[in-house]
Image (cartoon, rainbow, N blue to C red; front, side, top):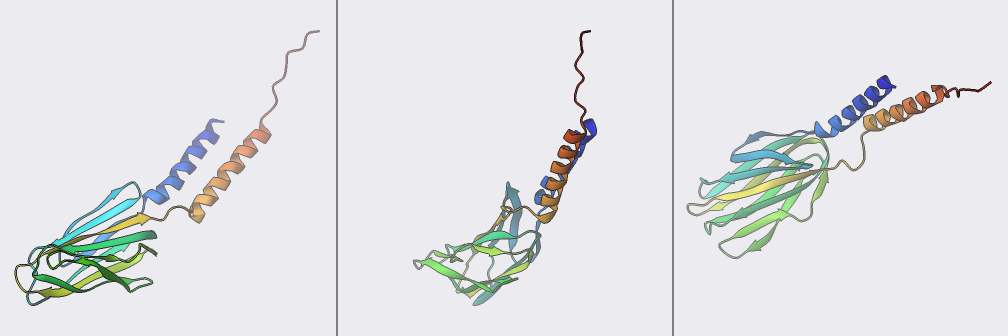
Length: 181
């Protein structure tokens, strides 16, 4: 029985470990990067650039994700000198354009129209715009891991565990009751 319990604990650890092994890495960037930081199943990469070139700028972040996820991206500036002309996420299934949500002449805010479900791959966020003075930009990439459906290896380990429990229960001998003569 002890071996069975240890086997089930080991199988559970392997199954949980596959989801915990998801890794998001920043491969390169022309901006200052904060992260990636992961809390539970959400990973965030912050980016800023305080020294934008004039009159035009081109900034990018290249990152990789080992598991599929639901991506949200925001891009902001509070510099009146900065005007974004495009922001595009390219990679597997892309490109995806960020859209301007608000521009009051001083503050500009862009994001993906809706969160996008993307697979494990390498992605590039390219930001282009104009800068007529001392401008800066900032934003974040947020990835919510899509672990709602277990991976095939997780299913296999679970089925092996159930089989082992059933086998152990079937082999267990019934206790012999003491009989009085």
